[in-house]
Every structure is written in C-alpha cells, then in structure tokens.
Length: 94
Image 1: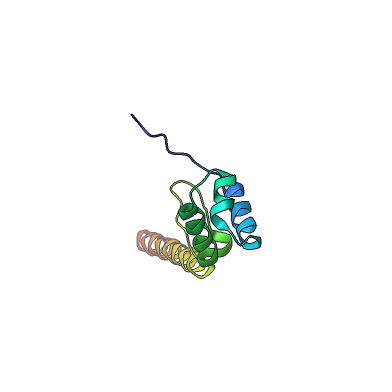
Image 2: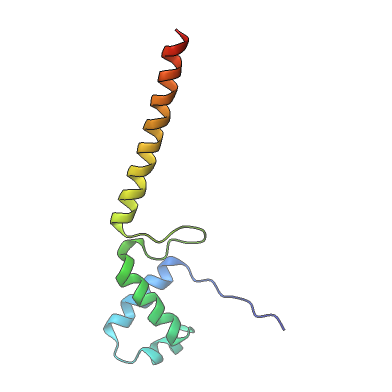
C-alpha cells in the first residue's frame, strides 16, 4: 500500500500558524485542520525562524532576510567579476 504525501500551500500553512498562536490546545487544532500536531509545531518553528521567508515552495531555499541579502550580493559580485573579465579581454583585442 502506497501512502500519498499531502502537500499544503503556503497560505494554508500561514493560516494554521496564525490560528495556533491564538489557541491553547494545539493537538485539537491539528485534528480540526487534518494534520498532525508534530507538523503544526514544525510549521510554527519554521515561521518563527524564517519569518516571511517561510514556506518557499518546492526546490526553493528557506533563508532569513540577511541570508537573502547575502545571496543577492554574492550573485551581483559574481556578475560584476564576469563583466570585468570580459572587458579586460576586449581591451586586449583592441
């Protein structure tokens, strides 16, 4: 028997986390939502750790705002270095 893995969209996860902040009994809330309590705790922890970067979707990395900024700047630096290298070669040709 094959178990089918359920996928929940970002909006569902964010609403579940919001509801969990207002409730005392998380096990009951998890049952109402049709998920496990462990899954709800995991979503809450992820939401606290990554904030607005939580629940990015398939294949996307979870990053804090600082990590996103670092990734952006590293990409920009790499592009600038490549551009400089091309310009150096162009100067050598002329």
